[in-house]
Amino acid sequence: MKLYDLELSGNCYKVRLFAALANIDLEIAAVDFLGGEHKRPPLTDLNPWGELPILVDGDLVLRDSQAILVHLAGTHGGAAWWPAEPQLQAEIVQWLSTAANEIQHGPASARLVDKFGYAIDKAGTLARAARILPLLDAHLAQREWLALSRPTIADCAMFPYVALAPEGGIDLSPYPNIVRWIDRVKRLPGYVAMPGT
Amino acid sequence: MKLYDLELSGNCYKVRLFAALANIDLEIAAVDFLGGEHKRPPLTDLNPWGELPILVDGDLVLRDSQAILVHLAGTHGGAAWWPAEPQLQAEIVQWLSTAANEIQHGPASARLVDKFGYAIDKAGTLARAARILPLLDAHLAQREWLALSRPTIADCAMFPYVALAPEGGIDLSPYPNIVRWIDRVKRLPGYVAMPGT
Image (cartoon, rainbow over all chains, first blue to last red; front, side, top):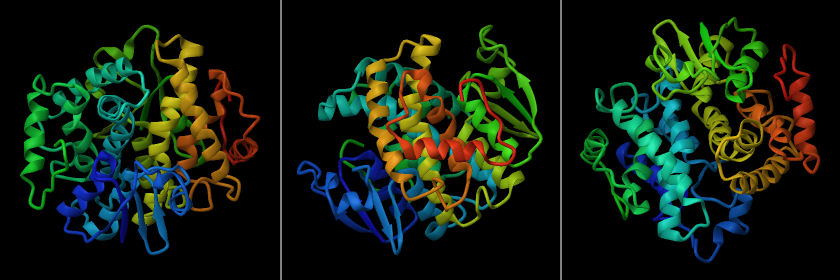
């Protein structure tokens, strides 16, 4: 399996983190992001959206980090990370949606502005972060993990851009349950970091 | 099963649409949205995020429309809509993420501004719509359905806010493949509309 990767992308890191935790071998292909390699063929033939990560596993090509987690966990990672029961899958999918919605357009986008100069409405990203982080903190008050009382791909999808929130100017110290969850993830066997976490 | 519902919410409509297509009985509980019923107990006990839809199925409570689709399809709808193979699930999850990310923050948010007066950066929503709709149109050039060559919950998650885009001031006529896909969804057995589609 080949992962087209950017080291500084939290979306790519979701995949690298999960593969490390689940002991899955990935061939990492570093993409020349500043040179725009992801915006032209052959990468746009794999992902017309011009984004990273991209996973190629035989004939299968996947363009979305959440979808890549489902495939890797379901096919190579084992039911602990992505169970077969739809009811349990649904509990996890709630957090895959949160990663793609509130986290991507909250703390992740605040970081894009501060760290990479993206022309995004910063106030909007901070407002979304200020709404979602207290909800996440409250959720974690009585739980060690986001779903199913164990580490799952829900945690892998949510972890990168929550842990990177300070790079978008967002202080996590008002959220002690989030801080403790970040520490728990970092102590999982096989954990790998990325710059900024 | 009980769905806490708002008729004018595209996220709630995702669930009503799928339940109609898959012939699943739902008890619909209309929520007094203007009165803020979803922002206070007992609904915030079910969903602390203060949002709709909420699905209650026995002991299971789900707060996210994509997660509700996974549960309904996997538990009550059959493998045609949500197969058991993780590789096929991943293909669908790509579109669940797109619904929560680019569509929610593109055409869906443009509609929130125009129709409900939300204080969201309208230019940003239109820019995101102008990026995602051509990609969606190109994807549908050679395909009848978004994933797996058949109708799945991918179509149910994407349909509402794409079909409602004109309510956010977005003209779909430059996207003939999207227009034809909308027509195909509308001709599915059991299809139900919502105001604006």
